[in-house]
Amino acid sequence: MIRFAQDEMKDTLKHIWSVCFKDPGHYIDYFFENRFKPEQTLVWLEDEKPAAMLSLLPCELIDQGERIEARYIYAVATLPEYRGRGISTHLLKEAQNILQREEIPISLLVPAEKGLFDFYRERGYETMGSIRSVTLTAKELKTYRQGGYQLGVLTAQELYWMRGEYLDGTAYLSWDIPALGYALGENGLTGGRAFKLELEYGEAYMVCHPFAEHVLIREIGSTAEMFGCCCDLLLSELPAEKYTFLLPSGSGLLEGIGEDKPFGMACWNNDLHKEMLQAYLGLMLN
Picture 1 (cartoon, rainbow, N blue to C red):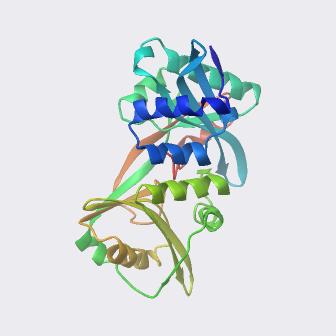
Picture 2 (cartoon, rainbow, N blue to C red):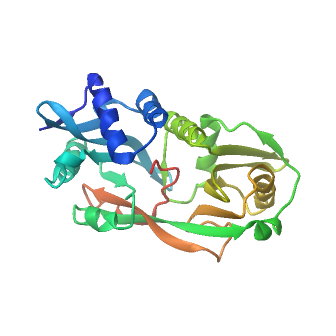
């Protein structure tokens, strides 16, 4: 039986999350305290207790001023003892039925690993969007380095407006201010850093996550003119051997280098917006 979650199911859903994703307790608690809403969570019941779950997080796709309501499918999980029965497939189908009834045309997801692209393709999803991944060594990054900036505080509200400015002209996934606040908090909770650079001729931002001798720049909003300042900040604040930038495929930054990789998938309830197959999916919870 599939239904929306209830608040009193939180502890059971936390258990499902812990078993399936192996995340630490403080990370799971952070999601359920700040992002969980029963009306955005589908559950599969066995003996009246949740055995599987799926979250439907609100978002929008924006292209040339047009805003299209969408849902991001997140934290699809089934307890091991109930796997092999097609429960996640039933949850995905029910999610699509709900979105159809609510006239929400698109659902999106990010497969956790390469092999899951085929799994979701068999269930009606198509590859959507690609990310250009560019890795530079610290030595290479130093060739771009320049100063002349001050550090500011990157708030969720500022991130919302700066994303809109830097991604204008690109089809992209937009998160609202509370969702971006959660993304910044989640990034910080797991050891990440977020930066706002203030220059005489503009502002730039970066959302980064260090991994040992490697730093992942999950998203950067910068002109080519400001990029040298971003490099200086990375080298100063997050010293590492290598730096990987995740960029929209059409980004003018580091043009001509890197590799385009499939990133997300989408399922449409109609064919009206399929021209957005190349939309940039940034700051995803994945």
